[in-house]
Length: 220
Length: 255
Image (cartoon, rainbow over all chains, first blue to last red; front, side, top):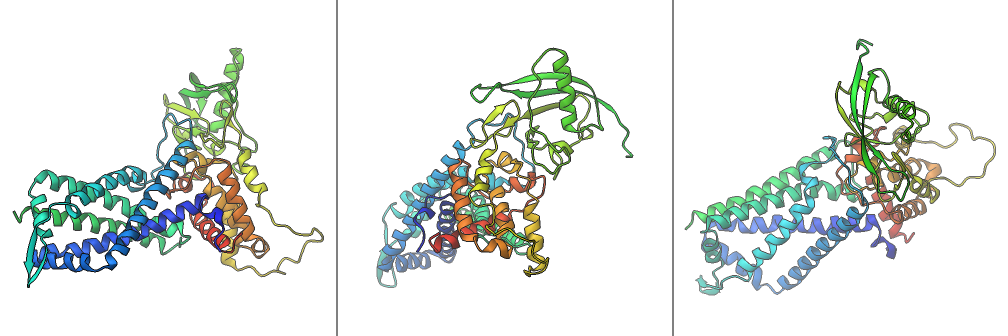
């Protein structure tokens, strides 16, 4: 049985943060894969969205996702607060060694906040956005494709979306390697490859989502 | 040495703090004729002689062996723990790493768990408390065992020795953006967990040492690796991963 003080310990909190992060990494890439139906066309995308949302298991998945997300945010805030108070007097001129901290690792809290704001707006714009209906092969379903295309008609929204998914890419590039390190896997020859995989994952997410936004903009 | 000795004139900006309660401030000093062959601590000695001659309070700083093995010297030099050179303690840092007319900013380690006692000297007894809570093995004393009575793989012996080179200076905490002590604690856990003699109490040890580390008010590791980069002994981040793994297993077993 897991000792109860695990969850209040520094390592326990880190590991749960990493685990929820891993779940969110999985969601992000699945979400991106699904959204690639936008490239196929309106019917394909709407049918995909309909199949996904009409399955009753979606509520279980959504509850799990919200739980993971909230836990990730709350733990990040707790850890950040603790870390902030661990150094009450700041340095006069702290310089990076250049051999440790990366842009991705140093900006985790900032990119995290950008992603949080982005996700709230994202849900309001799409999931809880305009409700059009369409008919695909005799089935009445939500025309989510139209909502997406109309949203990305505005170039400012495209720019904000690309900016936010780049923040997501940066955040996840540090996240991938952190999951392994925090869960105790650090290997002389594998760890450099894991770091590369993290960067590739981040690039895939940033480029993948951005390409969708730009593609949709030019569908107008 | 191919490099010729030169004399440097330096502008120093040093943290001065009377005691724990004092809020402290920076003071500027001009020091002339510093040999490039002198160590950083010898440079401060020279400054202190100048201060004493001027009837001023000399700068307090920790130092002991001055050969890079005791872990006493501890200062942030131009924003880097132990200064700009890789894997070098302050006492082994030489003034040839600086240029004439450089401005050098010297600060104490800054962390809630390392309160400043005076000037550049901080109280690092929180490290001692971490060690006291488990950084040892319990054995009955007696005659020394035969050298190879307990087999240890070459790989583990090397890893344990690497971890054991930690001199407990606190540069990891000082350079960590979160003032986390995980590199120190994990090195002390690793050096014992990797060997059969230390394995016996490994689960209780990791649980207890992490608990003390948390209680002392250190921050949490966020995998930046600034600690590894500024460690004068090159202690590796893989020790933290080992501690994380040891910790979850010890907690699963309810320790």
